[in-house]
Length: 57
Image (cartoon, rainbow, N blue to C red):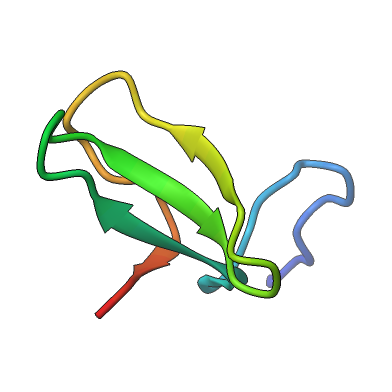
């Protein structure tokens, strides 16, 4: 029997569309950027990428 997912579990399906990420060549970390204003939002402490955020070209 199929069930709907529970509400409030904060699970995301698909990519985050209003944000992009790019790689900082100096620190080798990923930086998240707001797509509408171009403002930098967050920087990862490790060298891993953000989950679900598309990469800039």
